[in-house]
Amino acid sequence: MQVSIIQAILIGLVYYLGANGTPWLTVNLGWAFRRPLLQGVAVGLILGDPVTGCMVGAAINVIYLAQVTAGGAQTMDEGLAGNLGAAIAIISGLDAQAAVAIAVPISLLGNILWTVYMTGDSFIVHRMDALAEKGDARALCLWNIVPSQVFKAVLYVIPVAVAVYAGADVITSFVESIQGSIVNECLTTIGTIFPAIGIAINFRAILNSTGNRIYLYFLLGFVMFAYLGLPLVAITVIAVCVAFLDKSTDGAAAAESTKE
Image (cartoon, rainbow, N blue to C red; front, side, top):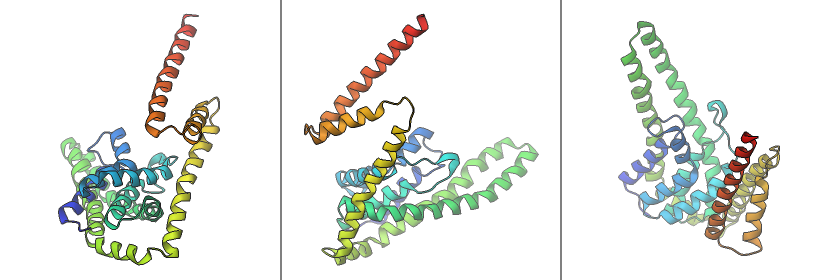
């Protein structure tokens, strides 16, 4: 698949908009857009294959279900994993499992961009300190947003755009060369294991929560899918109904205890 320069730049912008510390979206929306599922859908829309982007993004998203970036510490860049993982899969025709295996090391490379960004931002912070001493609030606000985000946009958009545009032929050639080989089988196997690890870590956190009954819903969903054969859409509708009923029950119980 051929990728245009415009498409490559747009994919880079998608990654930048979902990056940690980008102010253009709200905190919650920015966090959500950073998830591999939404990154994959956005990349898929740009490349004309949103279905594949959604499937690959969802597969990658499972790995990072339990990831927590406390205090701004970033262990893996799930946004870059979903962004380039989906792009590579669509461009080269990789299946979701193989794309997952490639996405994991890509997410580690995202830490390099984060480190460079935070290091470069330290110079901007020193400039802001000088403005704060002068009491120049307008210039302080300007330096807090514009130079920092211009630097971040250049740092985040260009590498991704170059990787998608210049690397499209290389990626396709590489995938074609490993088709049917043990390398492709290893990537597929690893990509199948990674989501299981993500689910296991998330499930362990659920079980360790004192007084938490969420694991029962998890078990119910598994039984409906594995043994009753219900489609995911039906299970989702049932889950939403149960969630509303459970919320209503908790609210009624809280109201009764308040009256007492």
